[in-house]
Length: 312
Image 1 (spheres, rainbow, N blue to C red):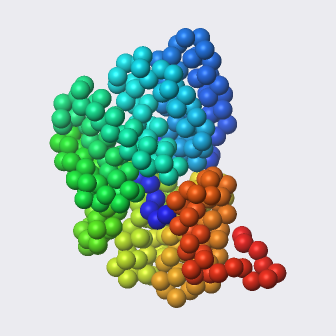
Image 2: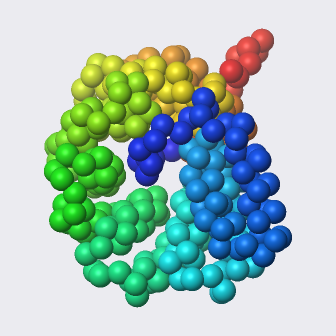
Image 3: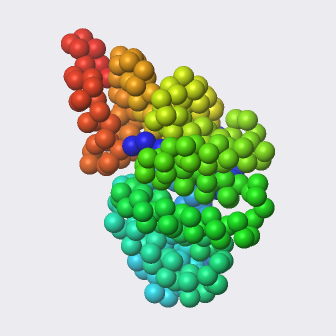
C-alpha cells in the first residue's frame, strides 16, 4: 500500500454526499432488471458503482456489476458491456484481484477498439486505467507505455489545463517514481497539482490525493519536512470529507507513517501503521495486499504492542 488512487470523477463524492441515497438506487437497479429493462438497470448500476467505490463500498459494487455482467454481458450492446467491465475492473483492482482486473480491462480495450478511432479519448481513459493495474502488477515498462499513450491522446483533445490531463500526469508520476525517475515524477505531480488548484476548491478530495502522492515522491527525494507538510494537508482535507474508518484515510495514515519512520520517529510511525491496519481490516479480507503490506511493516518495525496497550 502506498499511493492514493487518482480520482476518475471530478465530483467530490464523499461520506457527506450520496451516502443515504445509494441504497435505494441499488434496489431500483435490481427492480429494473427484474422488469426486463436491463439496459436501464446497467446504466444505473454503472453510475452507482463510482460513488460506491469512492465511499469504500467495494463489495456492494462488485456484487452489483458482476451479477449484471454474468447474466447480460452477451446480450447488451458492446459499448455498454465495455463500460460495465471497466467499472468492474477498477473495483477488482481496489480489492487486490489484479489478474482478473487486467483481464476485464484488456477486454474493454478490445471492445472499444472496434467502435472508436485509435485516438479517441475513451481509449485514452482505458489505457490509463490499465496502466494503473499494470503498475500494481509490477509491469512498470508496459504501465508507462500505456500511460504515456493515454496522455498523448488526451493532449490532442483537451486544453493544457484540463483536469483529465492532471489525473494522467499524476498517475504517470507514480509509475516514474517506481522506476526511480524521481525528478521527472516530481515535475509531473507538481504540474498535476497546478492544474487541479485552478479547478477545485482548496479542500477538494482530488487535491488531497495529489498532495498525498507528491509527498511520496518528496519522501524518496529526502525532503521529509515538505513531504510531511503535504501528507498532513491531505489528511486534514480527507478528515473533512470521509468517516474515520474510510480506506482513503488508512492509506494516508500509512504514508505519513513511512515519512515519520524515515525521519527517525518510529513510535509515531507505529501508531499510524496500526491505525491504518485497523481501518483496512474493516474493508478487506486478511489476504488483501494492503493488509499484508502494512502487517509486514508493523512486524518489521513495531513488533507486538506492549503488555497493557492495544492497537488503535
